[in-house]
Image 1: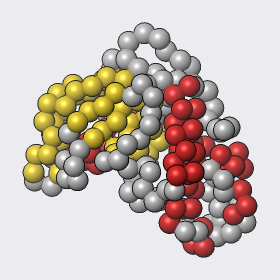
Image 2: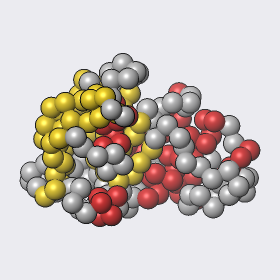
Image 3: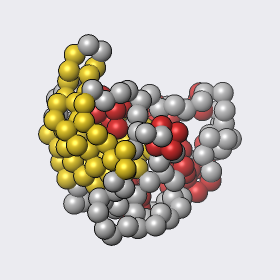
Image 4: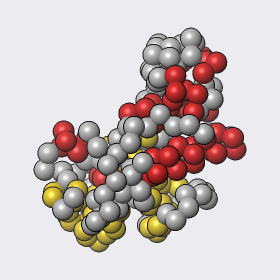
Length: 201
């Protein structure tokens, strides 16, 4: 399945993203402590755990949306969060909220190739408010793919998707990794990302 992601330069040497002894608060409660992992271009990491385990909190911290309580996040060996604007430009984010703009048409929110990759081309002229929840999720994925960011942070990305749409999601993730991008996804259900590491929270 075609994917509209522009290629990234594949790096074969040290891991591009490294987390060292991260601790994360949610509100005034410490939910994670001592988290560490590393990702090289083309790799994937699955965050697993029960509801409330801190999966979403960790993703938000990795995106720079909430501060780290302790530890360090490195990009190519340098502090990733020292320049928040530069770090934001690396991130493709998919949270629980789809971020779709109801008043805009589907075509106004993602290019044709991205819509085709998610099976949304026939909805292109419709305002997004007429889409179902699953279709809005697919539009959010199309926007993610079109943005061509090297690091995807996906919070329960399969939520609201049928089996065919999950297959499209997995194809997008495979294309992202084949081009040297990285994927970190939280999930409480099986998500078939071949060769992905798993972090139990």
